Length: 100
Image 1: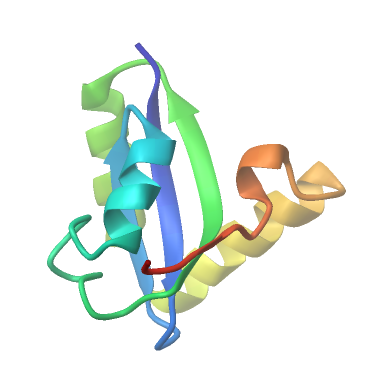
Image 2: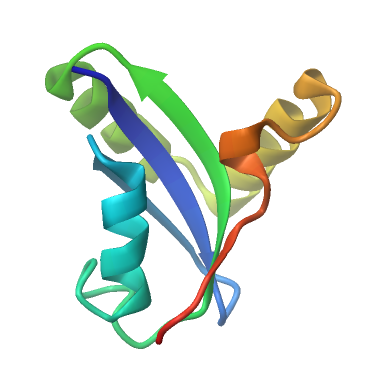
């Protein structure tokens, strides 16, 4: 099973990092205010970063590593990934997730 680490940019400019094995379901949960306590009142969101990993354990470790970074390092991670790809990947298309 593939696990995904993701970073959302909230409407207030803050960054939220999480993991999931079903990104579409998780984005829908965030959109209706049931994704995480932190994001409950911070929408709409823009999906800024995703990274696929082979196991939940690896995803949890990567999530913890990203969460330990300061904001500047997280922005650099997002920016570097976009630049190295040349263009946003389909799962990194700055998708806006809004509350219904």
